[in-house]
Length: 259
Ligand SMILES: [Fe+2]
Ligand SMILES: [Fe+2]
Image (tube, rainbow, N blue to C red):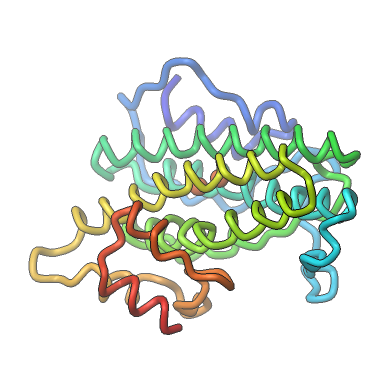
C-alpha cells in the first residue's frame, strides 16, 4: 500500500480497526502533492471533546492503588497514542517532498504508535474500561496548524511531546509497579523503549535537515510553536540517561534540565 493511501485511510477512518490498520507492505512511489488535513474523522463516540481544565486532570499518583484510576490514566495515554497515529498520518500527507528515508522512518514510527494504542486498549480492558468510554481531547492535533515543514514536525512531535514521555512513561510505570500492576508496568517499559527510538528519529533528522552553520538546538527553539514552552519537552522527574540513549546532546540536556 502507498504511504499516501495509508495516511488517507487512517485520517478518514470511522472505525478504530481502520485507524489501526497496518498494511504488510508499504511503498512510496507516488507521494503526491502536499495536503494539509483539517481534522481527522473519528469513530462514533470517539470524537474530540471540549477541553476543560477540571476534566483534564489525571488521577493523582496516590490514587493509583485503585484499578479504576489506573484505567483512567491508560485511557488518556491511549488517546495520546491515537493522536500520534493521526499526526504522523498528517505529516505523511503534508510532506510528500521530504527525503524518502524520513518518510519511511516516519511510517515505521506510525506503526509503533498503532501498536501502542492496541497495547493500552488491552490493559485498560483488563481494568474494565473500553477505549472511548471517557472523553478524548483534540490536544496535540491543534499543533498541526503550525506544522509547515518536516523540521517543525520533528520539533513538535519527536523533540517535545515524545521527549517528555521519556520522563512521564517511566514515572507512571514505576507507580503502577509500586501498586502491584506489573502488566501496566511492563507496558510503560515498552513505551519508554520505543519512545527513545522515536526521539532519536527526531534528533537525527533535525541534524540532517538544518543548514550546515545552524545550531540544532537553536533551530528547535525557533521551530516549536509559541504555545509550546521549552518545559513541555520534560516531565516532573528529568531523566538524563533516557535522553542520552536517544542521542540528545549535552548542551540540549542541560538547557532542558534548567527549565
Ligand atoms: Fe507511542
Ligand atoms: Fe512515540
